[in-house]
Length: 427
Image 1 (cartoon, rainbow, N blue to C red):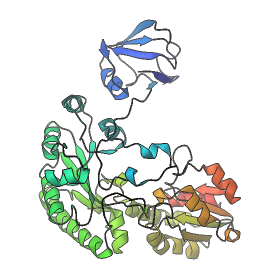
Image 2: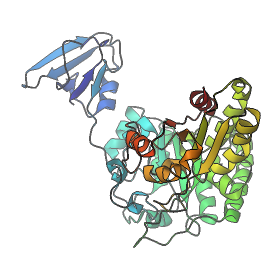
Image 3: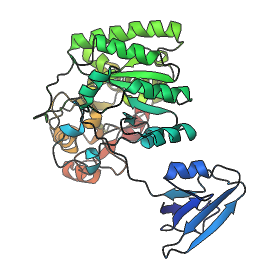
Image 4: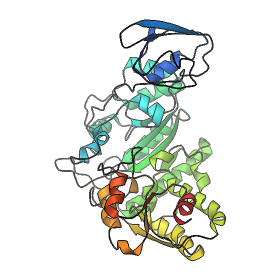
């Protein structure tokens, strides 16, 4: 494994440099950064290095002061997915997007490190032994259906191994698993969803939670299986089903176990559950409880917002999903109580199509097009907090600096903590 960086606080600082390699730990080859951390957790560790010329040398540590010894190792090659799921978002994209969006990752290491959902379809017995042996827990697993025949149809993979035996194997050995089902109307809903919920709940507490999320469809579905999104009535029925099962599970399992995605509540125009009903927010990054958390945090900070602000005019951009609750719950207070010159604009997703409604999938050009409309009416534009990556690039590779230059006005990136955003924009 090649060393990318050495922390100045590392006991190896000055002895090894970026470009050196970790050859072995205690005589054992290193598979990746996780493996390195696991093998250097012993009280006595011998680490063998090699410089760029191939010269090898070794250090011994009797009690490593850092679990990773302050080394950043080069990322290993990501394991990719060989399935062709009927709703795979990667297959619904045109050319010209950010390169990372075309990678179909299916890597249990990323599931452990970052909460990425995997199907476990490409895990070998050696992988399973490693997951159990190194306690790579929790993992996040896309199930979609526990009926093997239906699951193979959804994944379009006739060689797909059964999922329940794999989940049982992992949970019995102490691995915690969070699961999800992407529900496609007429495919894996109804009795199929009921079976999936029952089968996964039977594995609790090893299977700790289940997210039920709606299928995401773009307008780029030529030559792909025919699918449709939920109607408002269907979304409402699904919420009612999940709520009924939560009452049952809360009584028997002492957890609600299954949650419906926020998008269902938006689509059905239903009130979001109380924040306590999301328990420990086990599926927050999967869009479960985000809206309620946002509203609750804003309400808790309302008293702290009153004060003197500038007369700056701000335009807040958001996606179709977030617009209803922002316009109903948040902006009346901002405008009427705080007296701020703020306006909220819903941005239609022209690039992906109207069925894609979340702000995190708005492209830079769609946001820019909306911001340029009646631009004389505001002084600064505020972007949604999740539309840029760590390099300040939108999904279509437009940079934040290019966006600001094209708009000709200051641009702020919102935070999930709206109170902080208001202070930054108006003070």
